[in-house]
Amino acid sequence: MQVAKTIAEIRAWVRRTRAAGKTVGFVPTMGALHVGHVSLVQAAAAQCDCVVVSIFVNPTQFGPGEDFEKYPRPLEKDLALCEQNGVDAVFAPSSSEMYPRENLTWVTVQKVSEPLCGRFRPGHFRGVATVCAKLFNIVGADRAFFGQKDAQQVAVIQRMVADLNMPLEIVVCPTVREPDGLAVSSRNQYLSPQERREATVICRSLQRSAELIRTGEKDAARITDQMREVLGQVSAFQVEYVSIVDAASLEDLPRVQGRVLIAVAGRLGSTRLIDNIVVDAATK
Ligand code: PAF
Image 1 (cartoon, rainbow, N blue to C red):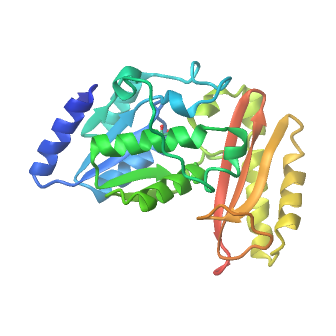
Image 2 (image 1 turned 90 degrees about the vertical axis):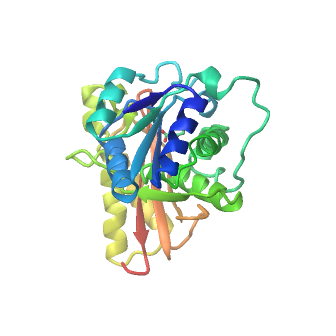
């Protein structure tokens, strides 16, 4: 497995790979890799000849007071996991390699970045879109793989790629869950044992919404009221939002119709957790 620390090294590796006629799948990450990332690597390996993983804790997507400093950075463990899972190359740049000078060029995806997490993390999606645009330009992959867990990130990146005619395909992979339903996330390791048990309330609220829709409920406010009731069973969980929106535009929907994203975010102690499901109301 090639480990590239510089842009020149990863570009040279990808150039050689492409010259050999191979397609390149790309999995951008911030490290602290878990089974969710492994599922993205597996999807990339199934759809492409070679897999590149980037590991970079991107400072521009963290707001003041967020967990940039304490974000886990177990690089050796991450590299071993990549190697075990057949990754062909890892791009693990330093901050100064990615941002060598004051950054004056930013990618802002309007509207799609604004609701949901955008209201609670100002500037976050500008940082995500900008670093993804840079990584896409650096790696030059055929396809990039993202997890549905970060639904708004997916919507922002898909819109950026479409609007800016970026020459790659975005592949969205299902959320990986723990046996008790909690969506796998690098941030789950911040939870105390009690918080870890309580965190399942989020997926239980999403399951309630799916049940309601299955039995014919279409009114978004009635569904979110029921979800809030479930979330209220854990008094420590501080809800940021419970929303039912169009899965592509992320616009609020008063009634459930088409491809609908049902999304929850909130805090347990100092840990911010998000989760979502997508329901196709045309078929359900
Ligand atoms: O999902 C993540 O880990 C990050 O937001 C990403 C896409 C690697 C950009 O820094």
